[in-house]
Image 1 (cartoon, one colour):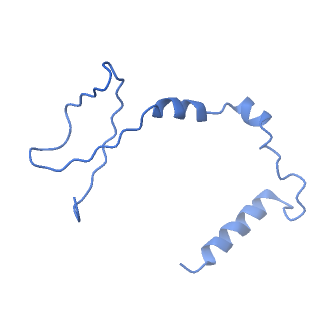
Image 2: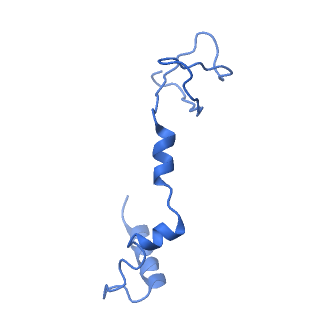
Image 3: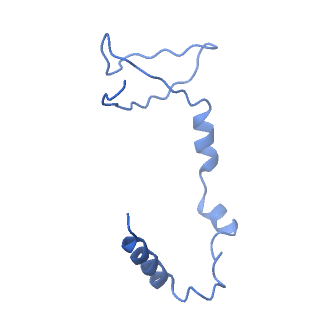
Length: 90
């Protein structure tokens, strides 16, 4: 696969038999190289990361910087950060 164009295909499967994954209908042809990466338990991780509005409000993140003296207005502060980032040399 050196120097070749790589296409990512995302397929979610539930394991039915221990140690077996069956895939069909893939956009690949006989003779093509294929590399597979399995993310085991990926869907559980994604569900744990979801945060409701109530949980976010109670997390302490909302208002975290309320007492910072260098942030007088969130819009002004955000604009200043964007301008600084845009002026950085690449």
